[in-house]
Length: 324
Ligand SMILES: C[S@@+](CC[C@H](N)C(=O)[O-])C[C@H]1O[C@@H](n2cnc3c(N)ncnc32)[C@H](O)[C@@H]1O
Image (cartoon, rainbow, N blue to C red; front, side, top):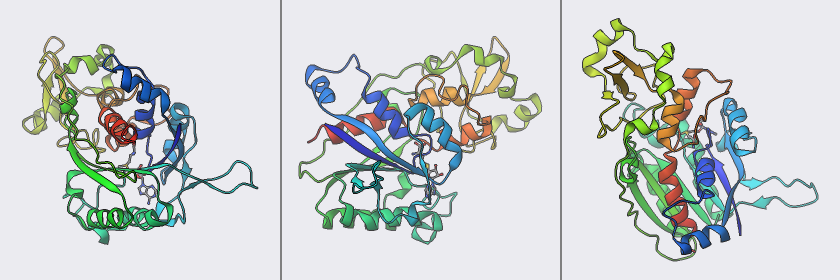
């Protein structure tokens, strides 16, 4: 069964990358899970983002060009037919990762008074008329309790959805990176959704780091900057197998502190930033995700810092779709 997903606020396609991961057989797949995975084929039916700069990367990795529009202006979230005589095709699932600024402390927590939340408000308004079979949402933990959170819950309840909410950090899956996020899964099948019970052993940070990257001078932290900011910088020893990185934000590479961790190698007497590809590795994206991208390093940091923890989303996707 094909499942058409609308990747709303698609960015570089964290959910599309989770779909890619879904298709890879894993050592931990038991026979039942593997059979289910063969029976169900999620795919990205449409992707929408206001940011045109993601188009090339999205198309290269996920095979479709995202529609560049403002989500608040949509009258429907439907697939445009390839043949003009046919009606627009509905999408089975909506995945929404709206901007988090309306809910974060740095973003002043203006919630529904922040114009950046209009797009989510429009999608909530469209749910009763479009009734996608499955819905997923990701945001910062502070989204919980916001007016939009309440409005979404009320709309889902009134429209007959069963839903469950989760606060999950990739560390629960053994990934040495903090990124606690709020997730909501909703389905119309009336069956209760499962708990997120993944507890995996922590993997060493070195596994996600590329040794050649130490030679990239653009990533080295200059001595004067190090001297000034060191007390406030989160610097991890590459040889420490228990090291866990801080959450990488879209400001990494621009703000020297509170935007992510740095790496130290004593043998090399160096402190450096993580490369965008290394952060993408930690986020669960395929190897060398940004290699040969035309985007500058600063844009790559912004895009990966805004994206999704793919390992977590892949588990949530299976919990949602295999629940039927
Ligand atoms: C938190 S990021 C989502 C990242 C994405 N899901 C990923 O995996 O990379 C929010 C995204 O929403 C987009 N966006 C913000 N406001 C929008 C709007 N009004 N309409 C459409 N897209 C919007 C931004 O350009 C950004 O890519």
